[in-house]
Amino acid sequence: MNDYDAVVIGAGLGGLSAASILAKNGFKTLVCENTGNLGGCCSSYKEQGYTFDTGASVVELWWIIDELFEALGKKTSEYIDWIPVDPIYGFLNADGQRFTYPVDVKGTRDVIEGFSPEDAVNWDRFARVGSEAINEAFGRIMTTPFMTFGDAMKMTAKHPSMIKLMKYMGMSFESTLKSFFESEKVRASMSLQSYFIGLPPALCPGYIAFLAYAEHEGIFYPRGGMVQIPAAIAKCFEEFGGEIKLNSTVKRVLIENGRAAGVELVDGTQIRSRIVVSNINAKTLYLEHVGRENLPSWAVKAIESYEVSIPAPMIMLGLDTSPDLDAHHTFCYTTIDEMNAIWFEDYCSRKLPERGFMLVSWPTHADPSLAPEGHHCLNMVTFAPYELADGDWDDLKERYLETQLDFLEKRFGLEGIREHITVARVITPKDFGKMLLHPRGAVYALQNDIMASAFFRPRLRSKAIKGLYLTGASTHFGGGVPPTIGSGIAASGLMIKDYG
Amino acid sequence: MKNLKKVVAVLVLAGAIAGWFQASESTRRYLKHIGKQVPYLPYRYFI
Image 1 (cartoon, rainbow over the protein chains, first blue to last red):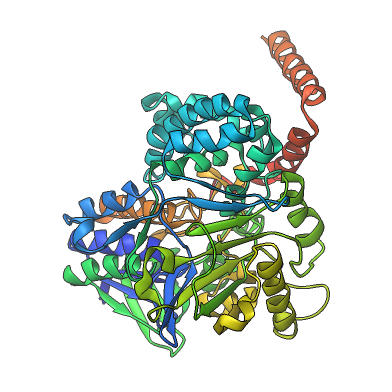
Image 2 (cartoon, rainbow over the protein chains, first blue to last red; image 1 turned 180 degrees about the vertical axis):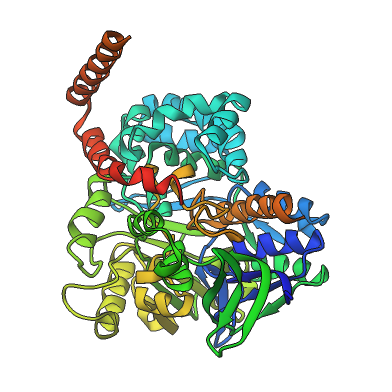
């Protein structure tokens, strides 16, 4: 006798999206979440009157969220109050030059024209290809289950614009930018997005470069902090009768006769269900929760072959003043070669990040209610190894904080910011590993190479264990708010087809 | 038929070699990176 139709492991965006659609379609569904918070890498926490976001900092490709709410028969606007974010980025380059890219495509063209008149024309071409890529390909493939090579062929036949994009699958992000832009300054200003899937411009697939255009379709911040997105989905889920158990850690997936039969919690409680849905890292799921003994040898070999993604340590600052910045995001950059060196010279040598690179998010620019009156929040993100050559993260946390604050003062021009800090918290890759059960602190689950994408990424419907479904950053299309919600939409479609 | 297969194989190989030498350093580094994962694809396709 089953306790539930479906048990979902993890209340990240993928798990909550799948759970809410299942509940809407009459599946008795339970979500077990390890922590006391919703959202996984799209969450927020409160400290001394400040609300800090842990992970995602804005939403682009927002129509995927609308698609989820439509599937639930709801209106997004009744659950989430979107604040438009404009300009998209403020930039600081190595020469100390400061500029912004507005959401308006023409406005960005004007800024680029100031650097390179040729690249203003090239921007028009990039925006045309980007618009096709985003609206006709990305927007659709994120909610489509890529289970086989045949699925990809069918998708391409239905949306021929995907053929144009295939060219960029055989090119790196760096080569793609070079094929469009002449100016090193312009290329470098669009290079950050490669790290949005956890890879340097040299190794990131070329089609990801069009994310630099995607942001011009509109970019939003949910009033109240990023946690409002998972909270809104969870609210819908509970309205359909779904149950969420926080602080409830799953120890293993029950396997009977080669199929998933429920889960066992760390306290020994067994919960039986027809379907088990995972929203955790696929390596943890298969190698620890399912267990090698329950997997065919080819499945073990497949899952072991994936590299986990790069970790992203964060620093949260509460300030008693307004920082002198220009946008919700400020990106301090140098050149694409430097962006690659973060990976090849620092990350691969297990160095503490001390190079001049950082993304600073300023959420109180969009939503002042996240801090006490007159105060502000800054979230600083870099990329760094899980294990450091110089020692342990716990011992080097202070050095890391001081280095990044120096950088904030000198490169960002925020002289004297230290005197205005009321809260400073470092979340290291080890902290993320413990909090969110991310193996080696991997923020985007599995490395998102082209050879670990689409039907070469762990499937939404497991091929190794019957009744086991996957969602989230480990699955097709990878990490990020829209892709993980898209995975939940696509996976729930398969479950309803199989068990509805 | 057997000869045709051989011709196609030689043409694909020649194309790949020519493409490799025409590719930029950046593209070669990218192709080397993804090439290392090719042996795992038959396993990954079935997970």
